[in-house]
Amino acid sequence: MQQRADAELNALVDNFCNLVKAARISDTVRNSQENLQIDVHSARIAQAGEALLGITAELKRDALLSDFGTLNEAVAERTKAFNTQTDKTDTVLQIRQQ
Image (tube, rainbow, N blue to C red):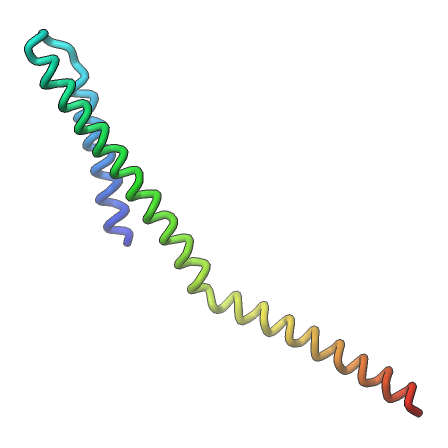
C-alpha cells in the first residue's frame, strides 16, 4: 500500500511539473498543443489526488479494523467493570435477603 501511495504521489508531482512546463507560452501554433497538454496533466493530477484519497481512506479503515489489541483491552476493562458491578449488586441483594 505504501508503494501505491508513493507511486501516486510521484505521479502527482511529475504531472504538476509537466503542467508547469506546458504552461509556458511560446507561440500561437504551439498554444493549442500546450492547452491539450495542460488539460491532460490536470486530469492526471486530479486522478492521482483521488487515488491518494482512496489510499488514505483504506489506511484509516485498516487501522480501525485491525487494532484488535486496543479493542480487546477496552472489552476487558468493560468486562471487569461489569463484573465488579455484578459483585456489588449480589452483595447488596444478599444483605437485603437476610
